[in-house]
Image (cartoon, rainbow, N blue to C red; front, side):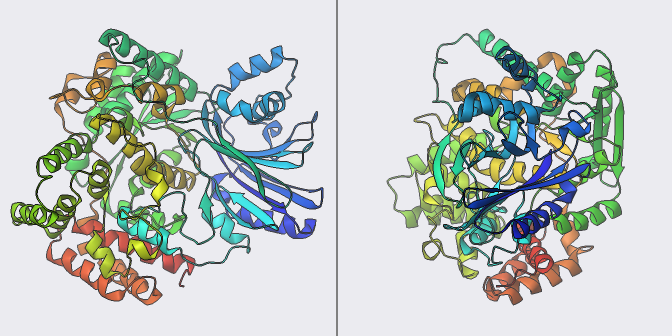
Length: 637
């Protein structure tokens, strides 16, 4: 895991080196073990590559980047892990290639030499890289299948192109204006995270997952393509025997975990009381001859038994006979770490602070790599949205003959005793009618249409659709007639990509910790997304029914009885007391910035103070985190 930076375009080498060094140093936290910068002239342009290294495989200097292929002169800076690198190395050796290191970076260079951009189809891992093709004077950039690793870019047509692992690195280049994108801001306030392919600043974009682009020396895109896409729904899956399906899934999950244990350092497992992490730990234990390589880590709020998962986690670790590390966090420590997490945000985010705390606790134990169960809820139907969205869709289908105003009135009357946030959400869903993606997106929404309008953000004035998204991002998310399978794709496209994966990367790397996600292994994802909804979640079955059936031998009976739990800070309570002063200051910053209308900020605060124990806290928190980010980055526009 690392931080990368690249410049391509027309400039002099000294200026390019200075730019790349600034971008690289802005990501020092991503790679404390080594750094490197290379600048070269090429056909009227200059290429500069920068790298910060967190050493995981081949800890020797042979893993230094930018890495050069001595046969071709190609150079690469690469962030991530290629888990099938040993198999690829054997294939390449049979083709006559030799290697000087055990690094997967060298495998990537040789893969490109042998197969060109077609090598991307062979990779199994998480990655984002910039590779300079010296023979053709072209820069290739690419990102993994699910977007686990980020790659941001900016360009000035005909002059330069830059890319990096974080937005802050691009801004440190001095080439990009610090101007807030109103479209990105609206998406952030609507969903609690900036929605790809937008970034918080105008002129900055995100390379879409599973895609590649090739640029010439002026920074112009000359070729592009996709190296993977979600499989067509139901291909070769209808009518399969249940036992065969379970056996396939278990084998793929075991192979995914085995791949993700590839490391020259100790590996940790984020262990909760839940099903995902228990399955990962149990399988990881069977993949290891000894117990020293894999360690289990559990973090809990010692002041609040409601969030304490340590008792079940402790028994799980004992059952699998792995070293167990328990890290109870007192509220005072948690509050301090939340403030630290706010300081290291790359873009504003209202989520991910639990990840920051877990990552910090694990890193303080000397662990540089940790497996997470992230992705399990999306591919194994773990969220309540897998039940709620189909139910609401069917209700809207039944109410379809009624005009929107009557549906809205009905929703208002039913939710009248409930909180303002619940009532607004119900009314807006009722107005949508029979719109599956709209129902899902409104359930995931933080601020309502009405609240965003009060803040001066209307989708039609900033180039967004009615859901505060770019129109094209909905493509390929829905499957005909299968509501559960559609929700799985929606969850993966929106919440997983824009919130969980981004926060996992930013807050993990803020602690120089590589977080690996075996549940999102490409082969496992391909298998899961071909399954019909009735296999994922049969009528009346509990969440993660399929995972329970696949890995039943790994679970204790008590784990089936408990509801879904999570390590989630009590922000609503904190905003009333210990974080009250910070809330007031942050909201003042938002109002003074001019990026939104101040009356809308006051309206959100008023509802929260009137209904502090409802979900109104999330609406206040999304503005608080924005205000802190604006103050930190001086991003007043």
